[in-house]
Length: 318
Ligand code: CP
Image 1 (tube, rainbow, N blue to C red):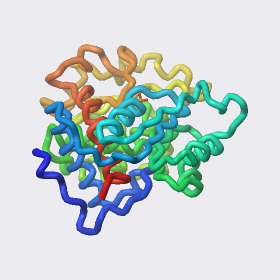
Image 2 (image 1 turned 180 degrees about the horizontal axis):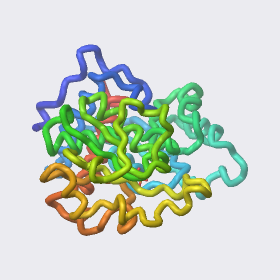
Image 3 (image 1 turned 60 degrees about the vertical axis):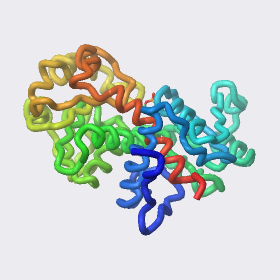
Image 4 (image 1 turned 30 degrees about the horizontal axis):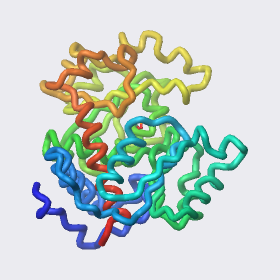
């Protein structure tokens, strides 16, 4: 795609003014972001300068939890579009003098933020900030609940390989219960017409009244049969209670993703993983590093392009 073929916004216009959940976006807005992500991927592939659609805008990245991919790709995305980007050094901030997360966010917004990317585990914090702050609030990861920009970049990655999402079968494997990515991916991929499955041991599945439209499998053989994409998930020990502390014992032998177990999926199926990976816990390093079967680094590449698209759609120049 050339710069001249910039995707047109939806006929109904892009009206979303927050991105806290995938459900904040209408179907045409999702399509627009995926098309725009592909557009920006072209600039990144050519190492060409992108249009400065965020010139004069201030973007604040406020991450109360650790992050490599999300924080740094939002940083890069904003800079490539010409924004003034501030990464808040939370570990050296006044949070440690007792300031609340909300007061910190309000203070930063008062410095003139147009858009704030927030990662925090506190349930309801993003919604509260959206009501309190005059800037656009984007969820950079909310506990075990939602990670909408990860879902969008995962969809953009799948589309770059298959040209579509509709009609594909995506098996999301592992610690689904504690994964914000699994939830956002399932919501988005289902809306885009994919069949989504959760695969893993019963104690790492979400409660039965959640995701009732998603098939569940407690063994790899049935769960991976016919899958086009196998999405591995990290074992999220930091969110587990004492009862799940032994979750990794015997896990790889039963559910680990490897060249051997990927054979259970459709021939030529691809493996994905939102990262960070724990090699030897949920995925074998040889499969993760296999360029013929793994889209994991492509997910990272699309992370920048997709976040450029999100920033542009939400606060870019008209
Ligand atoms: N996938 C993801 O959110 O990675 P980080 O925790 O490194 O941002």
